[in-house]
Length: 238
Length: 135
Image (cartoon, rainbow over all chains, first blue to last red):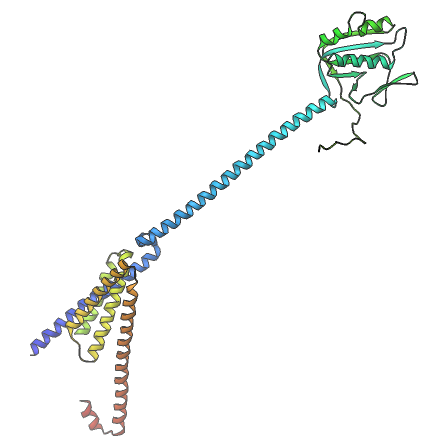
């Protein structure tokens, strides 16, 4: 009986010892696993968790991509409009330049002629100059000046007291009158030097000295007065 | 002898556990449930020892049976998309508390009985009676 009891006790001890081994080992393994999991979460995460995380990141990535695209398209739009504005600005600049040139607000140069008119037996009067300017314009002169005073669309050439000629408000002109014109040289000269009825013949016959000279480059200064409308305003279209 | 076996078992188990490889996180959930079940069995065993109706067969089968059953239930729960392991934890931990409570009560009873005994002895002391009783 004692032997059997002892055997029983030994068996029980061994079994309990084995159970202790299993229990403590598993507990420690679990501890280690949990500890490691905090550090390397991804490697030991469950597949499902990984999948959800992946899909979340994917959606986030897609959203961010979309935003990027939107921003890019916006940027290109802005760039296009900026280009357009640049173009319009350039066009406006060009137009402004042209308008200024037409108005006579810029110094210009080009091929043309110089007509020199001098008092001869009879004096040169304002109407002579006006006629000359008209003739030149008829011949297609693009820019005209008299004694380096630019003739623009508002220019007046008047005679005051039958004694002196005034141009552009305050400039007094005296003989010799040097009239410069830029334009097609052959047109200009041919119109002026028509036989008998032409300007040169006509005025030479009436006792003035008229000389004409063709030049490859004629320089005409800009109009140096002020141009502004005080009474006229733009009429709005209805 | 049993105590020696427990101590040796714990030491060997600790060594094995420290040098064992890490199990993947997927299985650590099952292992946790198994550990809870095993601990429940251990406390049940201690309780039964104190109540003097300890049976090694019941203990061993309970130890492994509960662990395996809890693991199987957890797997089933995962397949059904129900957190059955929560029920298992509630049951096992509840039983652990019950067992611990009865163990505690047993020791409190024993301790207070001893004190009463000592007091009773002190009131009726003679040296000879004391020694004889102790023997």
